[in-house]
Length: 304
Image (cartoon, rainbow, N blue to C red; front, side):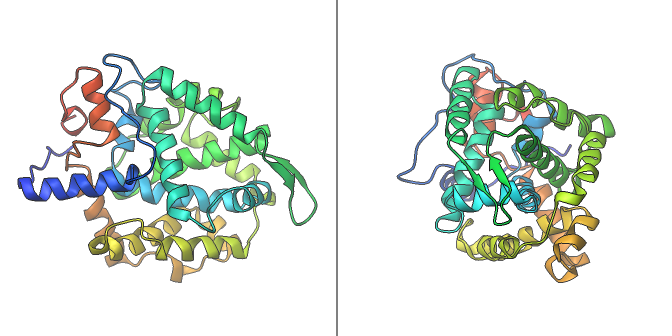
């Protein structure tokens, strides 16, 4: 891993402010990752997950890739599209989902457990029928497993492809380390390795189907102001990078042609942004604040 990249104070201040706005925008709920001092997280600070989730570029790419895969499954697609604010307020919904992931990985254990319990209760009221008449319920074991698998696949895969190659062992750890948290969400059989995730994808092949909603989602993510104006062109590339991360056979099934993916030069640009993001310390980020909560230096995750 490369050493941290010091920035001039004025630039560091701007980067910190942008990151703060993305995760905890003004007027939204604020979560303090630095308190209570010394309280461990559900996942340890020397984990692969702590290293992966600190990177804003791969986190965005992995999150979009995960949602593409989620929307390919009819039950998850109907639940997400009809019981969330993706259509009306996509950025708020993505930030809320991103914050939940941050609390799950970095937050103090007591706060993470309370937050997860709230999510489980909320999901208990979400259910209905798909347009084809199939009943679904958000806490259904198969749907929960699919959501967990696609999230781990997206985040780990984005870091591995666009930031820094993970060893086979570390790639598997990106799936096994969140298992205790997954069980709190009610997921009993989440894939514990990359191979198990790919096997699940294969087993789900007959259930995945194209939908105009997937293209609506991609249009929304290209247009929504997720990043400050100067970084908006990079946002467009990261949406394409997310499409590229989806397994080729799934892209083909969903109708995501090469036009939706990255060209060679664009991929090099995304990788450069991902590598840079991995070296810039964001002082107000959940990763850094959680290191400080545990008595670790702010650059702990940037010098390993």
